[in-house]
Amino acid sequence: MRFINSYAHLPEVFFQRIDPEPAAAPSLIRLNRPLADRLELDLPGNDADLAALFSGNRLLPGSAPIAQAYAGHQFGQFVPQLGDGRAHLLGEVVNGQGERFDIQLKGSGRTRFSRGGDGRSPLGPVIREYVVSEAMHAMGIPTTRALAMASTGQPVFREAELPGAVLTRVASGFVRVGTFEYFAARRMEDAVRQLADHVIDRNHPAARKADNPYLALFEAVCEAQAGLMAKWMCVGFVHGVMNTDNTAVSGETIDFGPCAFIDHYDPEVVFSSIDHFGRYAFNRQPSIMAWNLACLGGCLIPLLDEDEARAHKAGEKVLEQFIPAFTDHYRQGLCRKIGLPGDDESFNLARRLLDLMRRDGTDFTNAFRALSAAQTDPAPFAGLFAPDEEIRAWLDDWRARLALTGAADTARETMRSANPAFIPRNHRIEQAIRAAEHGDFTPANKLIEVLRRPYDDQPENAEYAAPPRPEERVEQTFCGT
Image 1 (tube, rainbow, N blue to C red):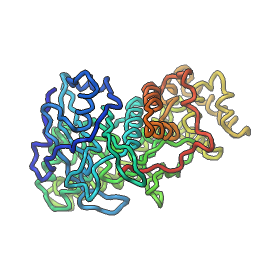
Image 2: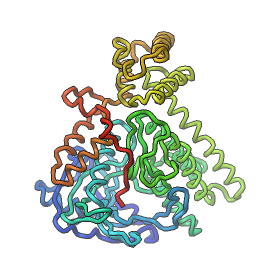
Image 3: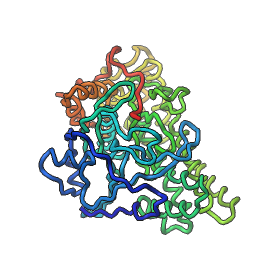
Image 4: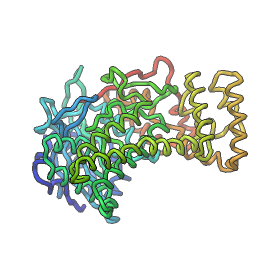
C-alpha cells in the first residue's frame, strides 16, 4: 500500500486528527475482494484480523485517521458546523496504475463533530449503503464504493436497540459542497483557495491548465453533477437527502441514507421520513442540484475574479448552463432506454411513455427492460399497461421511429445496456436488513451478488426483478443518525 494522505497535509483547521473508537467485539460481515484487489491492499488472510482492520480496532499501515470539517445547507437551512461526526478518513492510497482512492470508516466512533451523537451506525444503514453503492457502481453510475462491512458487537440506540456496524467506503474524494461552505462562511479565503487547489489536483486536474483554474473547477463540478443527475433519473434513484453536505465535488453519489429506487413510476415520489415537504422528491433532484451548485459558486466568488461584479457574472454564466447540460445528458440517456438516438422527437416519444407509466402505475424498471424485447415480442411490455389504444399507438410510433432513424438493428442491445433487469428493490433491502439484525446475512449477500450483474437476465434469480406485493411496499426510508 502507498498511503499519501494529502488531505491530512492541509492545515489542521480542515480536520481533527483522531483515531477510531475501538469496537467491543468486531466480526467481519463481508469484504469486497475485487475492490480490495483494485486498491492493491495487502490484507491479512483471516477474518479476525480483517474484522480488527475494518472496525477501526487496528489501523491500516500508513494511515493517518482524521475527521473532516464541513458545514452544509440541510433542507435549505444553513448549519455552519457539521463535519464527520461518525466517520474517520484513514487516508489516500495510490495503486500501481496511479489511481487514487480515499478510504474511510463510517460508524467508527465519536469525533469533535459528533454534536452529542454516539458516533456509531446501526447495522441497517451499513447494509443499505453497501448494497446500493455497489449496485450503482455495477450500473455504471459514479459513486462511492463499499470495501467492507464489520459488526461491532455492541448495540446502538435509535428508536430501539439495534446491532452496530462499521462500513469501510472508498471514493475519489470526500470533499463536499459543504466543505467549501465551512470556510466561506468564516471568510477564510485562503482556506477556500487551498481546498479548491486540493480538489483540482485530486478530481479535476484539467482545470489547472485553464486561464482561470477556479472558474474551470466550477465548470467541471457542474458538468460532473449534470451527468450524475441524468444517470440517477434514468434508473429511478431517489437520493432522499440532497443537502449540500451530501453533495460531493468529485461528481460521485455519496451518503446513502434514506435513499430508494422507485417501483411504479411516480415523478413526485418522496421516500425519506424527514422530507416532510417533498424538497428532495424524485423529479426535483436536478433543480435541487442546481441550488446546491449555486451555493458552491457563492463560495468560489473571491477566487473567480478580483472584481466582485465580474466574479458573480462569470459564476452565474457557468451555473446557467447546468440545467441545459443536465437536459442534454438526460435526453441522451432516456432515448437510449428506448433504443433511439438522442434527438428531440425521440425524447418526446420517451416522455410520452413516462406519461403512460405514470397514468397506469407501471413499474419503471420492468417496463423499460420489457421494451428491450418488444421488437419481436411486444406482449409482455404491453401487458404492463392498461389495455387501451394509447399504448398500442405508442408502440406503433416507436417502431416507426426505429425504422426512420435506422436504429432498429441496434435497438435491442442499446436498450439492454441501458435498462437494468435488477435494481436494489426497497423491499429486498429491508428483508435483508431484518434478517441480518437476527444474525442471518444470507439474504444480504445474495442480493449483493445478484446486483453485481444488473444487466444480465439471470433467470435463476428472476424473483429479484419482481416489484413488491402490496404488503411489501416500502413507503418510507430512514437515516441512520
